[in-house]
Amino acid sequence: MIKSMRVLVVIVSMLLVFPTWGERPGRAAVSSAHEAATAAGEEILRRGGNAFDAAVAVSAALAVVEPESSGIGGGGFWLLHLAEDNASVMVDGRETAPAAATSDMYLDEEGNVNRDLATNGPLAAGIPGAPAAWVHIAEKYGTLPLGDLLAPAIRLAEEGFEVDAKYQTLLNFRSHVMLRWAETAEIFMPDGDVPELGTRIVQPDLARTLRALAEHGHDGFYRGEVAEKLASGARAEGGIWTLDDLAGYQVIEREPIRTEYQGYELITASPPSSGGIAIAQMLNIIEPFELGELDRVERTHLLSEAMRRAYRDRALYLGDPDFVDIPYDMLLSKHYAAGVRTTIRLDRALESAALAADPARNVVESDNTTHFSLMDSDGNLVSGTLTVNLPFGAAFAAPGTGVLLNNEMDDFAAAPGEPNAFGLIGFEANAIEPGKRMLSSMSPTIVRSDERTAVIGTPGGSRIITMVLLGVLDFIDGNGPESWVSMPRFHHQYLPDEISAERDAFNEDEIAALEALGHEVSIRTRPAGNMHGVMWDRARDTVEAAHDPRWPSGGAVVIEED
Ligand code: GLY
Image (cartoon, rainbow, N blue to C red):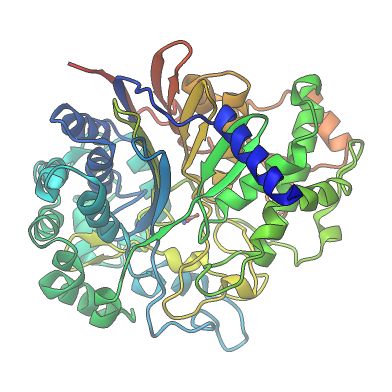
């Protein structure tokens, strides 16, 4: 009796706090990392497509014009909210380990991880999920033919796009690897070097692959000529992909992680992303604190301590939910968070070593991955975070396909406690197994109250989760997307045991105060993240979109209804 009354109370209060969305924004909004991709989304919305149609067009266009960050040879998570049904789903297009993958495939005779094999060339590549996700979203949730949705991307591949500062900067990290494969270098470095700004990159093979997908749907990529070229091209250069691996790839629809914080509902990424659980944990840990009453040092210290603890649990417990038992109830419980909170002192940082695990070694850091946020005039929402892992993925394009392969296998724990390219460690839960999906940090998120809705996300490797946390807190503080995307960022990920901050995040006194609490503060030379957000404010009847000013190639647009 008492239990059923409690259930009733919860349902009634959920209805009061999170009413079904009867109203509609009456305007659409798109924000992505590239103007041409935002324009592709706008084109589809103006033709009467819904948010899900536009999401496919934006994703495919990004795959062409932002090859450093995502692509048809990669994967991602697309968090969809269907306004009419007031329902949300996460389309998991994460890559899978090939059937011949083994837990020790990157270890040398001494048991050390061979970082070159784990990150460069086709052995580093998981079976791509992006094209399967595009087809799935178009067929199940879209209203326009797949060919129409891929048309802007095909056009961009055929006509080319101009090299921008982001392409150039990130290629500088990977050009030495790209030069190992003549055909790959020819596409992305047409003059044999990192191209000048404005150089046109034309991708006729990729256009043909996109046409095969437009014409034959899923099978256009995963079976037949494209699949044969992918598998044979990968195997010729040390990869292990088979036709069966490609033919067997399937997207999975997953229940998003949901949590509640100060009257807001968060709908966010579920495993194999670690993002949603970690964000929920951090919010649960900080919930009793009045953040507004803390000064900047106290607030940074508290958030960093919450981050440290959530990333420690990430390393211990999270992996592909189809392979490991994830203790969801424990990790998402407010009681568990309350226990964790008791280990936080406001006057002193805890050393990560006191939480048990091996120290991380040097981190080779780079921004990668991409994100777009989208809303249509009916209030359908898409938060999509997509990736090829490191910039330009494995730096290898399968000959004759234009498909740049991901190097997502490095998101597995290649050896227990051994850090990957982002310094993240993992254990058994994220060990390599055939068919398994590697743990991710991608955290596409939707936040809503009865008055305001935010669609938010960012690239940035292991920092994605904390950047989304900071953006969500800024939204809950009452600010709009211009503020979330541009605010200075800081991050703690358990190991390395440091607060890593953007140059303008703290002044000298604040750094000294954080150090006095026991934190090591490391200042980044480069910006962190590339956040794109849209917001619907029902009370003010406004729709806003903003792209991250750190990389000017982004594009954000609000589209009035005709
Ligand atoms: N490859 C980056 C991520 O999935 O988190």
